[in-house]
Length: 49
Image 1 (cartoon, rainbow, N blue to C red):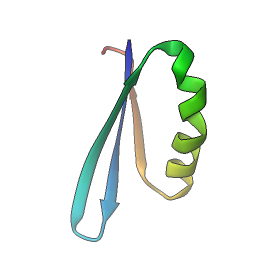
Image 2 (tube, rainbow, N blue to C red):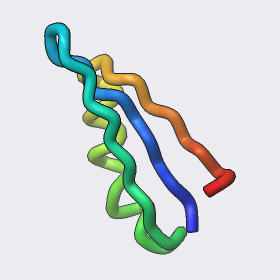
Image 3 (cartoon, rainbow, N blue to C red):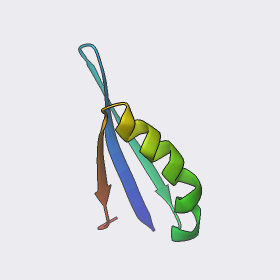
Image 4 (cartoon, one colour):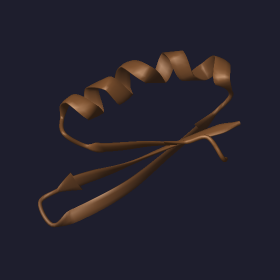
């Protein structure tokens, strides 16, 4: 399983969001990741988990 982590920054608050799924489920999640990136959030893919 892989884990996708990204930080969402709103004002002075920082939210750490983690999404873990089987590889086959990641394509369904990619559009959301792209939207997050467009909104200038920090996206980090952690292949170690």
